[in-house]
View 1 (tube, one colour):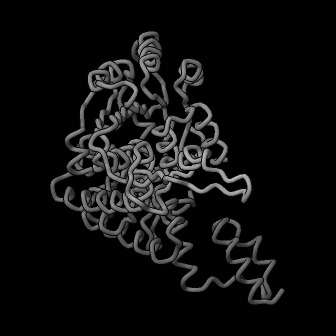
View 2 (tube, rainbow, N blue to C red; view 1 turned 30 degrees about the horizontal axis):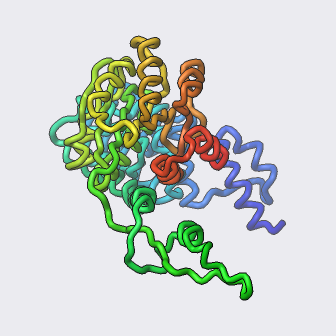
View 3 (cartoon, rainbow, N blue to C red; view 1 turned 180 degrees about the vertical axis):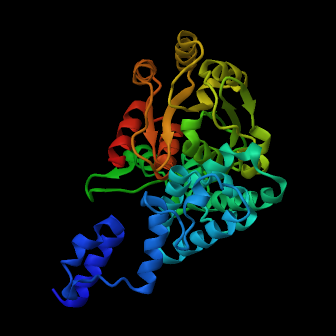
Amino acid sequence: MSAAVERKTVARWRLILGQSAEKQLEGCCEGGTIGLTEEEQIMDRALADIYDDTSDGTDGGTGGSAGGKGAGTGKSAPRLSKWLGDVRSMFPEDVVSIIQNDAMERKGWKQLLFEPEVLAKVKPDIQLVGTLLSLKGKIPEKTKDTARMLVQAVVDDLVKRLENDIRRAVTGALNRRQHSPLPSLSGIDWKRTIRRNLKHYDTERRLMIPEKFYFFDRARRSKEWTVIVDIDQSGSMADSVIWASVISSIFAGIPSLNTRVVVFDTAVVDLTEQCANDPVDMLFGIQLGGGTDINKSVAYCEQFIEEPRKTLFIIVSDLYEGGNRGALIRRMRELREAGVRTMCLLALSDQGQPYYDENLAKVLARDGTPCFACTPALLPELVEGTLKGLDLTELAKRIATKQH
């Protein structure tokens, strides 16, 4: 191993382990010193401010004054702003998000997000949006515009990632139900064409010569299905709430779907209008935290079910029910028996396996409402399969397998 490669490797470990490991690591280097470069020193100070309990912030970082009694003061804000700038310039984007969120959780810097100059330096990500939404009642007027711009940036990014796939999945599933005489090679319904032309099979030449081709109709039908998204806005569901809100706004923009969006804790709030007009308005209409009454929300949503067999009802919740558990089970069973396509997404995020009420999930699944976590990337396949009439339990198992 060359001296240059060795120094870089030891320096990386030094950044990971912190200043307390420096003496032990020096023995691994030629000359007995690690010799952090200027760039590595900036990275070291930024990491020490968050992960080194001995850091007091007097060396130019954000330090104790940002996380202690001085939180939210004008003097701390510029220092945190500089720290955020250092982190964003020195680390990859995915690492920036982790460090940024650790800073708020470990050092209590959430209050400093109320400073416009600080918020402007923050890297927009879904966790940060969740933090802002949980604090939105405390955001001062001077910061609201900046906060909204940050949320808008995250929403735009999520829409860009999902919109085309969801639209393609929905229109593809619904349009294949109708047939058209208009010729289009890509739109040929091969199964129906072969089945209807078997009588024209030429045994001597061993060929089937179709007398007529059948094609799928690509025309969109207006409001063919009703999609109801019922979202648990308890604090533990923050990431899922954001994803569900963005996805609901995409549903609302598809002509063939009549989309209803409801959020709940112990109260029920209908955000259908805000969702259709602006998903950012919808997010700011959500109040993270509070109790949970799933049964009350399902009872409210029942009024929008006009044609059960063309209704998709999605609950986004960890199923920790604080309301009438028995009534909830009966309602969900009755919806299934009426023909409604029901499912419960225990989490809708890129995170790991969620915490949820396993007993309630098993009861609902037994009655025909599959309960599982789903990453946003696999949601289009889930929706397409549902609208095509595939078995939801088998579809849920396939989605779960792909996620692992």
